[in-house]
Image (cartoon, rainbow, N blue to C red; front, side, top):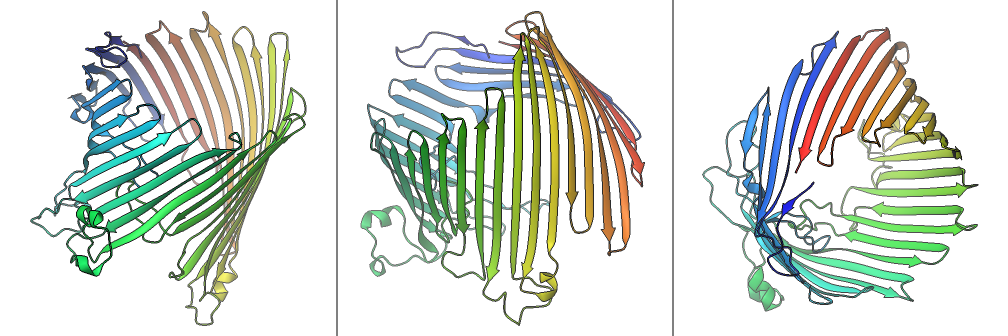
Length: 556
């Protein structure tokens, strides 16, 4: 987007007396349906304009929209803010999103300010403001949950070189315990986190070690009784920030990684653990009681013509063994890329996913009727993609094939009747595509696809074909394109092992689009789309839809 801007106020800063940018757009739409009710208005017109401006770093915007359905003029105060940079100093006022650590504070929107100071290799960042507004309880229908006003503050200090990084960050959030006229379904909370973070490069950066751990002191209810200071051994400066309550808990979450990069071989190792009960008000909802181990090897052979990448992930919950069930996940993935020649490439992928939910009681004889205390899901996915690309003068030919196989097995544990009800699903799919490109700007493409899905009591078969093309004129300023296709779907469902329901439908579709770049700031587009749905067997609705749109946009 082009901008109107003046020279900086101070040399080496981005602070300018005036910066203006925006756009104006017009669009007209038409729609008609046969066989079904119209999904939208038969005709509509809409115009939009937006203006973004900054005066000495104070930025905001203005939005205007008019349509045949509604009109709106809005100055969005939520976008009001200040942003200025001078050499190694950056100041932001308004809505800021500090990201100082993964588990402490990351991405939470704070209405306040943020200051970053980066003199040389040192880093210092301070943030603070309101992270949640007050929502009073209500008895009106549709009301979900009340909320206390929340204030959040964060800071980080670190030292960073080209290959090494050391930092420690902290975050504090507290709810203002207001009194409400109606009973509330929420409790005021308090949270204090500390996160050290280290990254070190060794052996000429062939090996990189990194890790961070967040310790979180979390109070679930500030109305709970306070714990006497003489009954706990906590440093005095911590009790000055956050006084422990009976609902307070101290927990941690962290991750560590090792990354080895050599000429023909690479290996990535990772470990993550989030303790049961861990919570942080700086990152929103956290899924606790999780552990994950990752191993990712890779290597290249034959002058990088053969590339292999693998991934092994082992995850589990119930880390303390206090839950009835334990879920373990095993994910194995491989990718092989082979370049036989400059024109022929083969890509192959395989993925294995095992999700196992088990319980100590699942094998007992006292399992309730109809209740499964365990489950195991196993999926295999195999994909093969060969491709061929070659050029002849100003012609480029591209041919690609895709074949895949997917299978899922779902077994229940803990109940004899459910254990016999094993669910099996198999899916076969394939596709072929061919494209032809001319140096003059003309390109043509065609493709076909097939998919068959079989499960215990159903079968689905889908067959389709598409043809399309595009042509660019006037030094690529005008581009015309079209696409048409047909797809047929047949479903068979068996009920109670006897009755069978069979349906067959066919869809025809056609798209025509045109894009004209009038100038660097002006563009125009036209599109027409038609869709026709036919029912060939059993019940259903035969219908057709026609859509069209004209759009113009000017940027300044």
